[in-house]
Amino acid sequence: MGMATSDFPRHFEGSLDEFKQRQLLFALTRQLAEAQFLRGDRQRTERLWQEAAAENMDPERIIALLYGVEDLGDTAAMDELDRPFRDQQRQAALRARSPLSRLSHFTQRYPAAPHRQRTAARAMASAGRSH
Image (tube, rainbow, N blue to C red):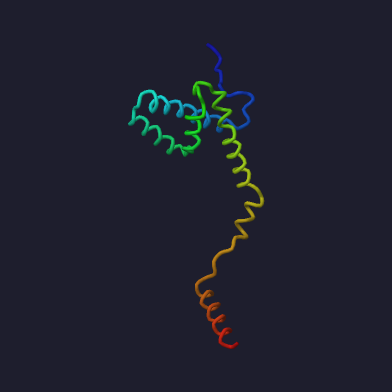
């Protein structure tokens, strides 16, 4: 009985979940390239785009991989092209969890209630008449 091996690289700078998402993205991109460019299979292409949407994958990210990597079999090239997007996602997630971001929920300005707006409008109108 052989030992199970993993494709999870020791140098990957994210979680296992992020790694799995990236692997799914790369696999879907390869399938799209085959369906769209090699086979010209419109139905399969549409199904794959629907799958990407169901997985909440950014279509611009997929398009960048489709057109930005010469050999989609080269995972290192795909990883290099995709790295800025992952870094941007990671930074956005950190900003969303920052103390200042959480504080902004408590300090947001809300529009005045309608009765307060009418009262303020009346006060301004009467102040204008008294001058």
